[in-house]
Amino acid sequence: MGGISLDEMKAVGALLEGHFRLSSGLHSPRYLQCALYLAEPERAEAAGRQLAALLKGCCAQLVMAPALGGVIIGHEVARALGVPFYFTERNAQGAMELRRGFAVEEGTRVLVVEDVVTTGGSTREVMDVATRLGGNVVGVCSMVNRSNADNPFAPLPYKALLRVEVPTYEADQCPLCAEGIPISKPGSRPTN
Image (cartoon, rainbow, N blue to C red; front, side, top):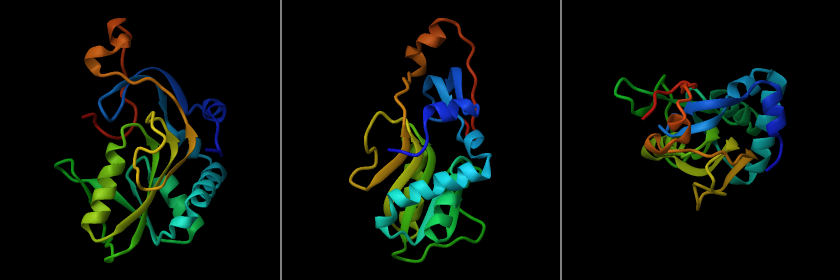
């Protein structure tokens, strides 16, 4: 790991404390809003260069990321690697797909980039899209790993700039709910 710190995230207001419903449906006392960290172009560019350096050996030919969270950091990683950047979106049925005229050539080496990995669900959806379209996923990276696993995508290479151990709870076992603490749903994706 290396590159950004929890103190930096907190200083720019990207580390939120409270009671949050994550995109996965899990609850947590902390939420990382990477978009606030990436709002400063110089920080975004530096984070992209740092991630690209960690996975340069994958020899990616294309970077893919999920909209909305992975778009800024994915673009910066692609720029640092000098390769194209595509993003996936959810269709009306909620399935992840590649639209806007993007196409993946058979055998293209794809690096999947995300802002925060918790369960890895949306990252795996992007990996599935890339594979279904003929791409070969060669690695995964994120700004933040809060999955409680060193590599939630093994055997593929995975790197993150920051690892954060933050508890998550199933909704029916959440101590914050039991205490009656109001819950909020930040982020761009509806919960499962």
